[in-house]
Image (cartoon, rainbow, N blue to C red; front, side):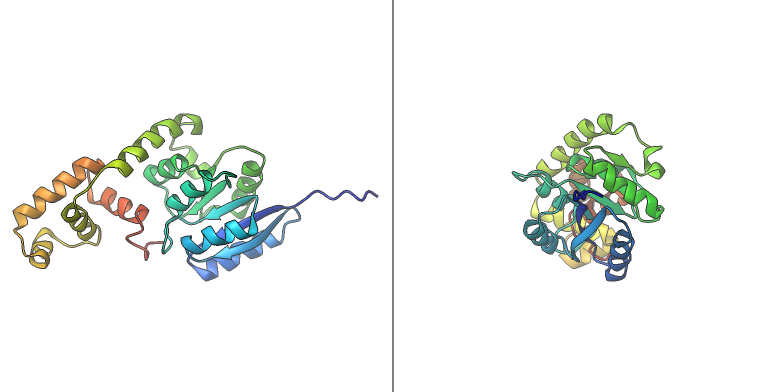
Length: 226
């Protein structure tokens, strides 16, 4: 018998659904090599608990109040002592995966995946690797080829300067308002709405309402989206 005992992988969990958060924490608690050292139900709180707990990695949902998971991953990866992150999300669309990797996330796991996938992701990322859920990996190029293009795309989007009116209209579009309804709210013509919307879509390269909604989630405008 030896006195040496391998240290457990210390993780922080962040998700704005308490029941889901509790379930994941219980799952991880059943393992011998991983432990949950803190949880949070908002992005801003997650940033605080990561600073306090100093975990080996953080598991983040994308849509959280106060700060979304993409922004949080970017902050954590840019710190002096970067904290590796894994996104645990319902979103399978390529945009979310690319944005997560571009922000510095080292793993992407779907919430509908098996528990083994999440545990494998934790162990892989802690060992210095990158983990993509098999359900999304088959739809994408290898991670080392995704990241450069995704990083350039994210940088372009973040640098795109929308006017106050353009941002206001894009937000309304994401919320499901028609041009006529937006025009009535802002007391301008439907033609003007279309012009502002087209300008914003061109700057952000968002060619459909679905992409506009995804952008709104990443910006933290739609906290109710899972």
